[in-house]
View 1 (cartoon, rainbow, N blue to C red):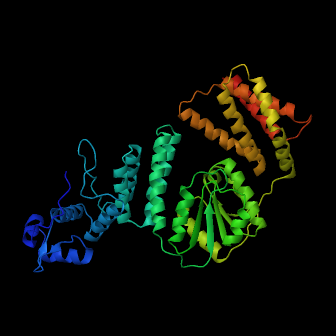
View 2: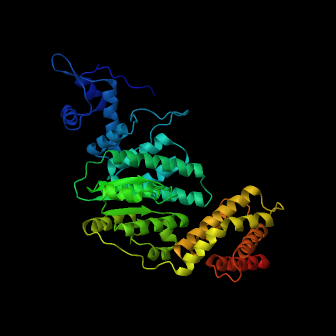
View 3: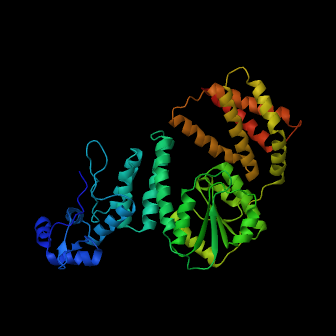
Length: 449
């Protein structure tokens, strides 16, 4: 399909004949919605281009599909703002056109839009995915689209990746499209109208930013001054950032065990600075016992309801200490483990240098083991590692990674023995106790196979 001509050629009578629109309707649309926008002759008569006629036909087609004229015009504007020409075909070899708009009469329209967006993302159909988003924003509020389509759509794609039915590349592609839309919506939010500033971000090493960015948008649209700090916010100079911005509230999001440990560290800093913390994230849904260990207000698992809780905290800020403190035994165990970590890993290398595990695999295993043990010790509960192990085992199984039980047993035994050798005789280190239990369970599973 070629681009329609913008040359003003046709008079009002020709357009009426071509579209079957009444002249009064045509004039009303021009006056009320600004579509189309005909030129005028020196005598004041309207002159329409072929593009104007095609625009009218496009609007009529949307009406036939169930949209009101105001919704159809809103959809047109959304597409234009997304740099999509509604009249152009998709650039594909078979000349496939834009998918038809869905009728508001259908009760599950938003579900259909979400399903379409997921499908186009998984097929790397960027223009089609953008079209669906534009259509959704023309029909629903930004809050509804961002939560019901983008957030839930990404959650479904993430579940598809975990189960092995989608690739990491597909998940990243969809996330990039969603983040780009959130950023454009953020740029268009008006200045704040309510007093008080809130800082939103991710603790050190946390790279998952969709939820905190969406929360920033939801708060800004409610009139709050929400400053988004981004991913992987360092602890260094955080005090200076707080002193300069004087926030009433800081909001942090963590998705993994080791970033939750960093969130705890940042929460303790905020406690010292007497700044309230609110927090959330996937890890607190997977391991709810973690919630009581964070000095702050838990926002729950439903992002849509979080702004109401945050508003209460902004109006009446209160400090919330952790309900469970890390015990002295865990603090001592963490200090001892950190001191001996390098020696433990050196012993593991010596025990497994016969090639049973490749150097790359061994390096990765040591890194992950040390990172997660450190996180669990920092959080005061070694049993939290059970969530991580179950999650990783499921991921490896779903993606058909070879999990050799003998190799796993060899590694666990080597790490336990190396830890036992590195620590003092009779050590009651919490990590050593957990490793002893892990060895027992791993060897027991191996013997039963």
